[in-house]
Image (cartoon, rainbow, N blue to C red):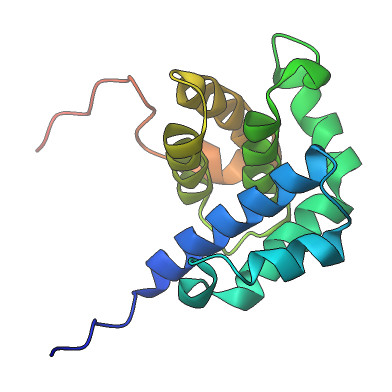
Length: 161
């Protein structure tokens, strides 16, 4: 019987984001307070594979900075923030927290991880909406990093020399 290899750090962070999404979603739909939600998530099968410290930082940070994050997200939406599905709202808050409060995460990684969460947990085309909002937020939250980026999505690649 062979042992499963240990998950790579990126996989641990992905699991951390998934757990944070589940926690924030539960908070948004009123399934208890943050402490109780974290305790219930310890029973989740992904908990053992997650970077627990990162999960807690993400969930606590997105919850504590929720009003600030909503204020930054709201002007980028085509509808009132209260009209977002709780899943898409939670995904946007998690990715926005990374963009605004964690410069160690490259902005493209924060956007991509938000899009991947939306593909897995959101509505059919919700990932496109999440991508558009996060692209706009990145130019506001990380203007220097976004400006330095040589390739924009949808833009033709420069010719090779």
